[in-house]
Image (tube, rainbow, N blue to C red; front, side, top):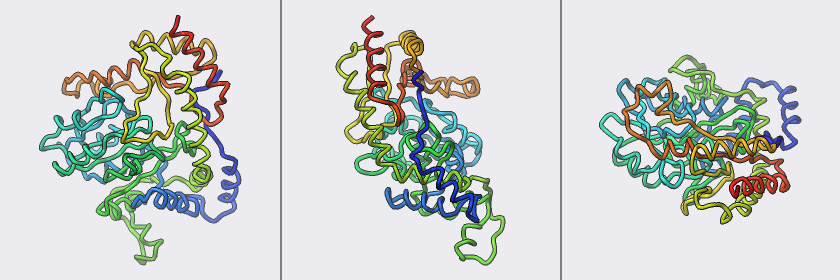
Length: 374
């Protein structure tokens, strides 16, 4: 079986973890945490980075920083992972789900604007498959209505919008380093703060509601409980693993590009018109997080996935719409989100990981072509 995903180890992870074993700091915010923070802040010019134990934790910190009150509303894509929405629901907000655009699963300003009202406080965007939403139009909406923009950049490490790194455009952003992502540490994430007004409180929330970060910098002579917070810091073991990955980022990204382009060469222009391949807008780069097909129907998608599985290839679909989930359907306002439903029924993701070979890609694409011709 060719798996859908296989987490990659660059080779230095074990030696860095051994360093942690022999160090005086294992619990977090040590040498490797600081190296990871510095990497992102320097390479992408992010204002403030804080590693978290997961992308979900990073989103929960974003929601806490938005300081939401009962009755406040947050606009969230329906075509996303549950963490994107639940982080804000846990803060007491009402989530109003937005449809995806027609060309790719991202939300657009046109889908967002009709949902804005006097109770709206936050717009959350998801850069699906690492491809940027049209951030200029979304940021213009936010400025017009004085809203906070949170980028769910879980898929989007090392991807850009008009030359600007994703995660560095909104007021706040969340990254994921889950094992399925380009850069991973098994389970991990990162909060990015791009607005100075959130920096101080972000550190307090990150440190369990205390001002311990200031204490360690010598800015206060003792630390205590200042605010709400939680244990969001990952251990130094996670940070050490992640640092090994970051050192090899260009190599990892280069290999993923090779695989993505191999799929694209083999399939583009050779499929029936009813099958759609990923569309990359002119304003966006591709970080090669995912290669997907859009089938004409749920039935075709199901048959294709079964055919691949029966021939030793694990392909997967993606999100079930959040607006029609068993948890939220009785809270949704009844709007039909047709594009979201279409992606949920027809999108199939192909295997894409560092160790996937050219022969694997050739085998997979020949299976797809054979199935669709039949």
